[in-house]
Length: 463
Ligand code: PXG
Image (cartoon, rainbow, N blue to C red; front, side):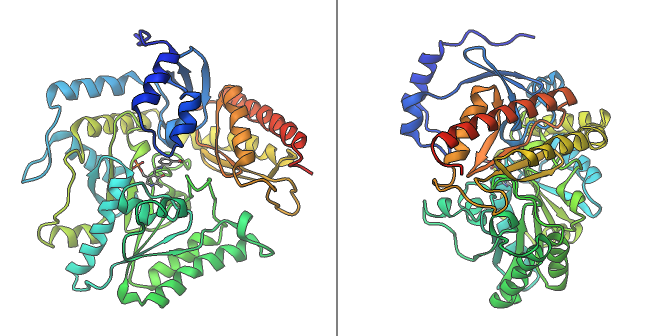
């Protein structure tokens, strides 16, 4: 394969990066003082940086390279599509082949009753679409007061004004005057950190019933929808107690509101199923999709809507909404090829039968590590909660994230990209990861946890 290796030396790239590039979710001054790690190539589950160092990417980029790096078929399809039709839109009575074929393919793989997609270029845009679409839906049905969207604390639904407002991250709301009006929040189903003396099952029910209480408090005539990730991803791979989703479903069925499942991370095999919705048996009205839809090879996202919503939107006159690059022909062609490969190679089915249980078994071994208070795993997404005292589910005396940052540093130094969210370590590797690579990931993670434990003992953070 022709790898592009004629780049500038790392120090020069870092200097240019510091001089001209503003990074997302980054303390710019701190980054510029040390220089960014520059990734130059990748193959399978392995990244290469500008110094030629390799790392096992246990985050699949940003939860998206589900099919793994280096699939030439996707490059070929993108190239051919650019030659054939690099751009056209689907506004003003036109359509194009990749968007048509992708929308039909999505209808085939999605849960029953999902036959329509409104395209965007990523998850944030798709969630912005959802805000406007659910409000337009209710207005079209003669209920214009149904506007409030209920979400959850610590949820992540994107970084646009709409997406970040739907999200429940306080640090994000604090910047830029968020949330926008008509948003409401309930607690997150995070038993480990918030469940106190309750059993996980009791806590799951309690959190779900906050939705019912919130609908009653606001008045159902004012509530448009509830949005949630089947498993919270960016919030730290927070897996809800088993009682949670059935109770949420009961509440949504009992009240006249729409359920939006944000499948941006959970979709396309991440949970060992096509959608997180399949994993939990949830019946949403709308699903947000992005990331694994194209395995990150090209930007594309969308809102899949159930037949009832599609019918109202289709018959509600002009829906005055759309993005220049929504359903971009190259993104759509690449997504189609990605899904073709997933289907033909039975990537999700084979994973579910083999590597999903294998990873779960390996990951569960971290229960025995002295630093680990809880182990979570659903399909190919997992977390480890670090604690100075397992039995008390205690927090560290240092600020949240201090120990997580130490662990993340050791991971990088050992050639493993494993992220931290506060003091949780999270993984979301390409779903094509094989058993040998899972073993390697586990060994590198174990080594990094051991080094972290030694460090924090020396610093007096572990009793
Ligand atoms: N919904 C969910 C559930 C997501 O995880 C988005 C929407 C927004 O998608 P776009 O394509 O607009 O980024 C996401 C994105 C992190 C991290 O730190 C997670 C995401 C994005 C950036 C960082 O884990 N998820």
